[in-house]
Structures are given as structure tokens and as C-alpha cells.
Length: 103
Image 1 (cartoon, rainbow, N blue to C red):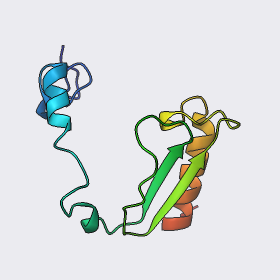
Image 2 (image 1 turned 30 degrees about the vertical axis):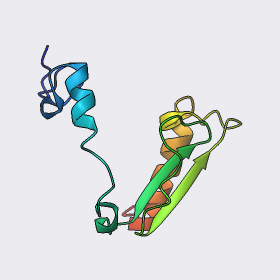
Image 3 (image 1 turned 60 degrees about the vertical axis):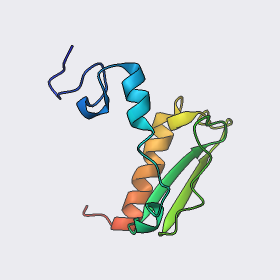
């Protein structure tokens, strides 16, 4: 089933038609081989204490901020699920600090 955004089952079309094809295409997206050194913009990394996917991004050489989230906050999982309001507030505060506010 294709959505109005052009995705199939939540996957971008370029990422394959099946879960297996998606998994194979996903491996092409990484920060190795000199890619991470090309990132120059301020970068925000949000890390839940129990995030099963990654633990921070210490290899970044650009200006970076690491926002850590804890179980006490209810935000220790991947994407801070369980504490989205807290996560969004901290992300928007970072955006204001880095890029300034217009209000």
C-alpha cells in the first residue's frame, strides 16, 4: 500500500520493497569512510540511558551537544519514548540556543 507521501509500509521507496531489501539498503547509511568528518553544522545527539541502537556519537568532530536522558525522567529508551514532551522541550531549547529565537 502506497501512502500520499510516496512510501510503502513506512519505508521510503528507495529503501526496498520488502523488509529484507530495506535491511540490506539500510546498511549503506553509515558515518564511516570519511563521512563523519564532512559534517560541519552544529549537531544534537539525544541519548537514552538504555537506548539499544547506539550510545552517543563521540566520533563527531563538528560542534556537538549530547543530551542525555535517564530512566528517572522516563526517557531512557530509544527516541526518549515515554517522555516525548520533555525530549521536545530540550530539543527546542537547544535549537533556540544554537540558532536564536525570532519571538
